[in-house]
Image 1 (spheres, helix red, strand yellow):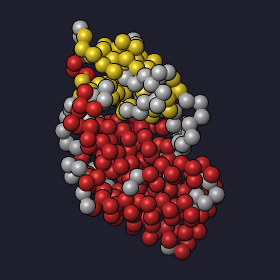
Image 2 (spheres, one colour; image 1 turned 90 degrees about the horizontal axis):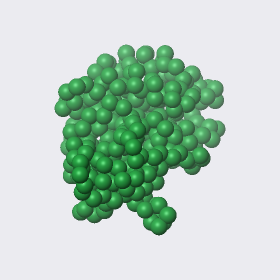
Image 3 (cartoon, rainbow, N blue to C red; image 1 turned 120 degrees about the vertical axis):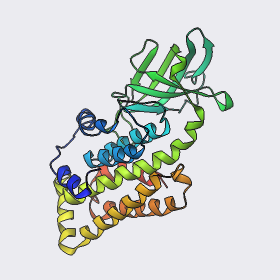
Length: 297
């Protein structure tokens, strides 16, 4: 991995990404090349989240950067070249929007039903869908461009509105057995999601500190004031230390169960509170979206 100082210098020259399409393009240009043909070396997942966070200039992109790394680390046997989502949420109204079910049929599993939350619904190419419940649940890879797949998009998401969000409908979709995933892998997703979103957030916070021009004028002024007192240097040292800890946790088979994860979560939440109060106090959008980071403990 390129040394951090070189990456930070590079990050200061990145263009702003004012919409999801811009960040999607930037991610594929700079992050996707990390997805080597031989993906058995899982070091690339830490790098994927780290570099995606450096490319981010807002928290919506922080989320999708960590999320993409977590999906790939969880379903390590399947290589995803393009953005992928993981859909498990279903409607409480099973009459109007029945959940996804499956049955065996010619050519594979035949899946029908709805999932009510899909991240980056306008840009994902594949979705890992949970079909069925309990011990009968199966996890299948769905190509969003396949016949029998319909994606719809929410008009006003309450959190991370910069990120497209929607739902998926499957209508007698035939999923080949080759697109059936190992259900035992799913147990690790929660821990990986938290870890890699933390990594992306820490990298993003570094970019905020060293390239304040990527943020609002008020945030840039706050960083300049912190630099004059040495507070920003102290924050950068704190972030570097947290990234070192995150990289060590990344090597663990179950990062969320590691006792050190609580230490990382505390540093991340302390950093979030500091940025919220010192840098983005007047930024209503940042205050709204930082609740996402606060969810992960």
